[in-house]
Amino acid sequence: MPGPVRALLGCLPGLAAVLALALCASGVERAATTGPRQAAADRYTAPRPTVVPRSDWLGGDARAQPPPRYDDKVLAVFVHHTDTPNGYDCADVPAILRGVYSGQTGGRDWDDIGYNFVVDRCGTIYEGRAGGIDRAVTGAHTQGFNHRTTGIAALGTFTVGVPVPDALTDAIAALAAWKLGGAGTDPRGKVRLVSSNGLSRYAAGATATLPAVAGHDEGYRTSCPGEALSARLPDIRNTAARLQGRPG
Image 1 (tube, rainbow, N blue to C red):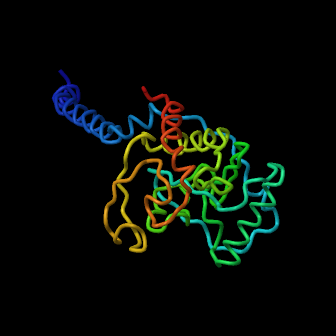
Image 2 (image 1 turned 180 degrees about the vertical axis):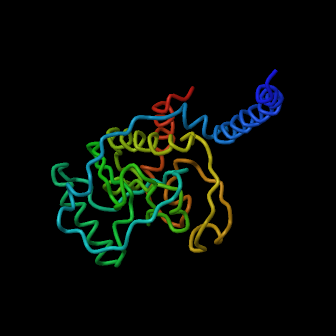
Image 3 (image 1 turned 120 degrees about the vertical axis):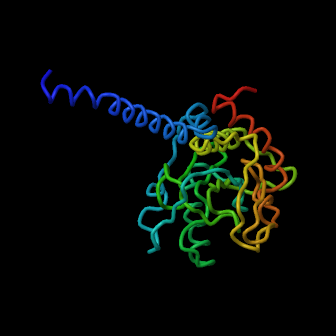
């Protein structure tokens, strides 16, 4: 038998071992990236609802601002109300949003509107803070818990006794289902978030266990999102879970 052939045959066991190790390592890597949360994210996703881009309502009124900041994922949603009048015509919402934007960037001197999204009483969803509808944009909506969260504001004031339109809560649920699906978060569950600011209900650096779909008042001392909207949060969570295809 020629020498080169014998050498090749002699190497086969070693080559097989290397190949087996490579396949094993590949399998471990796949297992590491397919943990329970990732598996849930792959399984329990919801379609992206229609969102009106901020360019449609803000136009040329945008102020100069620093670049957006981003997180790696969205683990939770905080629900707010804008504390503005309720008896609006939905056709007037773009002008109302420009007023909210002006109040936050002008009166409060914020760099942008704080909410990631705003939903009106007709169920229309508007992009709020700049940075990309599909991305995990760091908002300015819940003191201490702006990271890894999305802020959704209901346009209006929803204190005790105020009717909360089903179109509004359904739209919030659809948005929450879509945003939380990317991280595999069950909208009916709890998540662990780290407070970044001692002005929240938790000391800076403390880990808080909060609802995945929470009211603003669960992270910060406030009456927002109002008692009427807070009472609808269980419905919103259940609808969002159903939209993700989770069992009841």
